[in-house]
Length: 329
Image 1 (spheres, rainbow, N blue to C red):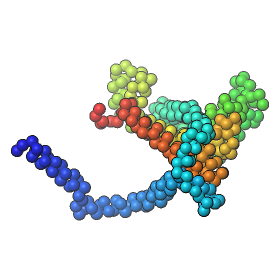
Image 2 (image 1 turned 180 degrees about the vertical axis):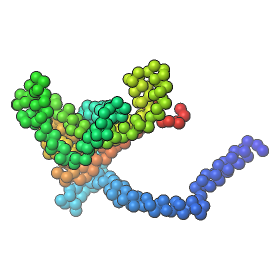
Image 3 (image 1 turned 180 degrees about the horizontal axis):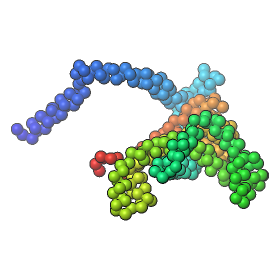
Image 4 (image 1 turned 45 degrees about the vertical axis):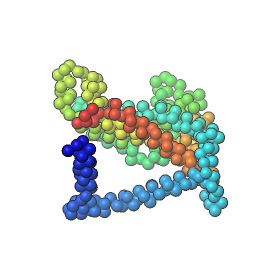
């Protein structure tokens, strides 16, 4: 048999094995039908409430219309995109604000959640079950209520945060003190504090990953003379990198959609000095305050593209630092 005949035979066998892989016999076909039946509510919900609205919003980006007069919709093609990218400076200003806050808040939030999980996983910690409950409990508080609580905590005159700082000798109370929500130099730190109030979910996920690290790795490292800090860096961190990566993706997506805190505290005004004029606040004002749905849909899709690009980049670079047990490199 010549080379071309062998290639044809191998190709035919490969196509038959591929078809056989997708060909289901009686019991498998029934199992597949039951599986589709059980996930059909989710599939229908995803199609009706996610996929179809996304497609419709993409169509909206090619029109100029308002909710108050949809019959006056006018097809403008790519004019909304041109306006957003080249004519509207607010697009890039709000993106800069969003990324600036993300650069400050992201590392603080992720490191805090991880270190608190390490603390709560310690064998020497007394009352760990109570502490785990206390750290997770704030996530049960509605977000609006938590924001209003923190606005009182950071009050420059009566807030207990400034009064505690005053105890250690730093002037913090009064008009000349620390104005957390009014000072452009402190506002992102204040928003980060509010975000730390709700890191219970991240702590819980990190805690579960820490408990899954094999104890024999720590024993081997201890025999080799590694101290606690060395074990944390060389054993714990590499073994939980998949969970760190998961939390990183969720945190990045959440920060790109950052909206509720600045909107509740400042009603989207950008106070102080435009430092809280986040991208999603600008999108909300365009789409729902000004009812410019065509331009609002364009802003939403631009953020989707940015989030998708960042996610793809993280997945592409994750293979260099994320360790999966049993994976061959």
